[in-house]
Structures are given as C-alpha cells and as structure tokens.
Image (cartoon, rainbow over all chains, first blue to last red; front, side):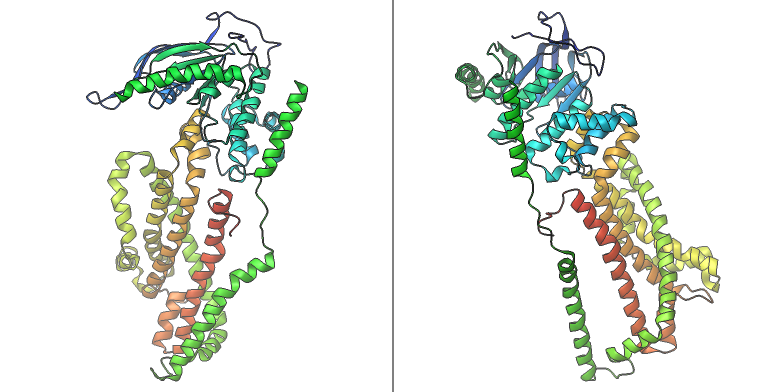
Length: 271
Length: 295
C-alpha cells in the first residue's frame, strides 16, 4: 500500500480513482542535496545537511525527528517561504501550509477566513460562496460559519485551517505539527478526518511531527531525521492496512522500533 | 466504512457542541444600569463635596459659587454653549480627520522602510511629548491670525490640532504593525498575500486594535490642543468653547466660567465614552481580545 500514489487531473476536477504508480515515476516534491545554515558564516548553525527526499504524487510522508532536526526549516523550503543554501527543491503543483496553531485571522468569521484563501487564490467572486460552503461541509463545520476563531475550540480552529488550506487547491499539504497542541481525543478524530480527506481528495501530504505513533498512524512512509544538523537517518515504509488506529498493536510495535532508533539518535548529542 | 464515517461525524459534532461557549449575556437594562450608576454616584459625591467647600467660605462666593448657581448659569447659557460646542467640535473633527490622514501616511512609511523609521521615528515620539499649546504663538505668526480674521484663525487652530494629534496616530499604527504576531504574517504569505494585498487583508486588519487605541489617544491630544489654541486665537463674531472660557473670565461671569468648564469636561467625556470606548470595545470583542463572559 506504500506507494499508492495518485494523479490528480486538471485543477478543480477530482481524479476518477487511485492509480498505483511505482515509486519515482511521478514525483511531486523532490528535495536534492539540500543544506541550510542560519546565522553568520562564522558561528552559523547548520539546520539541514544534504537532505534527499522524493515524495510521490498522492503519498503521505511523515517527517519525524527530535528538536533541532530542521523539520520546520525543510517545510518552509518546500513551501517556498525560505531558500536553500545548497541543493535544489522542486515542487510540482501548489503547496498549502498548516501550522501547529491554526493561525486564522481573528477579525474574520470562519466563512470569511476560508473565503479569503479562495480570493487570494484568484477564485472569482461568484464561485466563492458555494466553494466555502462545500469546504466547511467537508470539515463538518457548516454550523459554525458565522463564528469567529476565538469562539471555537482548538480542534475546530485546526479544521478551519485545514479547510482554508484545501481552499488553496493545494496539491501538496505541508503540515507542521498541526495537531501538536490538541488533546488526545480531538487529535485521534482529526487523524481520521485527515485520512478520510486524503483518501477522497488525493493530495500529497508532507507531515512533520515529533510524535512517533502519530507518524506511524498516518504515513505511507516515515522519514526519520537526525538533529543538528538534520540529515535523513532512516526511512520506514508503513504497510499497516488503513484505516489504522493509533492504539493498534501493529502501530505500537513499529512505533517502538522507530522510537528506539530516535532515542539512539538523541543520545548521540548527550556525549 | 460508511458506518465509521457516520460515527466520526457524530463524535466530531459531540466534541464541537461541548467546546461551544455558554451564553452569559446580561440584559440590556442590566448592562445600562451597571454602566450608569458608578459615574452618576461619583458625580453626586463630587457635587456634595463642592457644596461643602462653598459652605466653609474657603473662597468668597463670587469666585467660588455653589453648584446650584452654576447649574442655573449652565441652563441659562445652554444655547450659547451648544453653539460654542458645535463650532469647537467641528474644528476638532476637521483637525482629527487631517491628523488621521497624515498620521496614517507617516506611520505606514515608517513601518515599511527602516530608513524612514530611523529618520523620523524619534522625531514623531518627540512631537508627541511636546505640549501642543506651545505651537500656538508660532501658528499665529505663520497664519497671521492675530487680527481676528475667521479663515486665518481656523487655519492656525487646525495647524495646532494636527501637530497635537497626528504623532499619536502615526505611533499607534506603527505599534500596531510592530506587534502583529509573526505567525499571522506567515499564514498570510503562505496564502499568497504580498505587498498591497497583504497590507489590505492582513497587516491593516491585524494592526487595527492598537491603531484604534492610538486614535483614542490622538483624540485626547486633539481636544487639549484645541482648547489651548482657542483660548489664545479668536475670531470676531464666532463663539467657541475656548473663547467662551476666556470671555467669561474677562466679563467677569464666574458662574458662567464654571458652566463653561463643565461643558468642556462633558463634551470630552461624551466623545470618549460614546465613540472611542465603544469602537475600541467592539473591535476588541470581535478579535477575541476580551473575555466576553466578564464584560
């Protein structure tokens, strides 16, 4: 099930079904030999060092690492918000970025927040309202369209953020610990929600997390990064059948293996 | 799978319902009463204190009349005072409007360019600390407003008011822009907002609450500048609050002077409470910056 990738048709239209594509044949994100340093040349900190990563169209890849592995830096590079020092980042299609906090605009209602994303993406005015309603329906928040972000719970805000990202018609969702600040129950439900949308809409996901179980629960593939500098330490294909549960034995077993590897990596910095 | 979907939807709806805030709104009558009685009680206490001071004959009653004499005078002069307040408010509104335009332009320029900011940033703050009445003599000279000519008087007063208020507008906007959470800017950029689009859809709305506080402060400065200027610069054949104060002193009509003072105080309070405090509160509530359960 690992590389069940998808080929979306022209923008807006949904592909007829999921087509299996061999790894490497249809790459959406290609990161090649990317290094990135912060600070002045003398006391610069190397955040990323020679990262190679290829993500197939429709693939769900989780980037896993401890603090200082440059996960967020890597997402910023793929999102085009920052530039690599060395190497190249290639993205085929539009990217949409989600953060740990929903980062909704507090002066706009839920409806207007999603609408602004459509507007900035160039969707003509007459189509916007209907699209907003569809998107809110998709994340089950139609009843809250007129609320403002501060009136919602953290999980609801994150779903609005998801709708807003989907409004950009992103081919690649870049998610930076999007559920990190939520309680466990809400997070479990949002995992299901995200998985469902991903199965229906066939976008590609690059999902950053420091939660090993979450990575195994969601990913087709888990990429483990080392810290300071960030390098690819290992890659784990996840063959557990979907839908998965975060507390299933299969997930727990694999998560334990990866956690051991991650601890080894963290311990290296203790010396 | 379909059953799973229905269950997921029910679970989500359940969590959402539990997370929704409980309504705690008080009735309109209750809120009005809560807002009115403390200041009314304070005013009554003040009047009582005033009357007691009058009874002690600390000052002769000709220069410190009782509040009742003053209220009579206020009633008698109501027509003139209303007219005077109208003219003064019109001047204030004009000066305030010009200040908003100039202050916004200067604030935006300083926010968008480091050079402009370094060049004029401290000057703006310096201007803000300068007592605006100090500009009045210069204004009279610049606009040749010493002779009581109406148009020249208006220009001189406008000049003083704008110098008093515009720096607060500029500083308020600059503060607002400086304090935008970086995450919102990042979110805006990732949605494709750049340049003027970002200014219109992200930066200006995000800076609005602080900008409104700046406007509130700017109005207070404008009002002070206006009183100072009106005391000194007059035009023949018009009435204004500042001019009225000076006229009551010279006449002399001391109860009238107290009535004028009350008018100056009331107009200031009413504008602040009915306009600025209201806008400020509405915006803050909308942005989720105040706890709606306690206000």
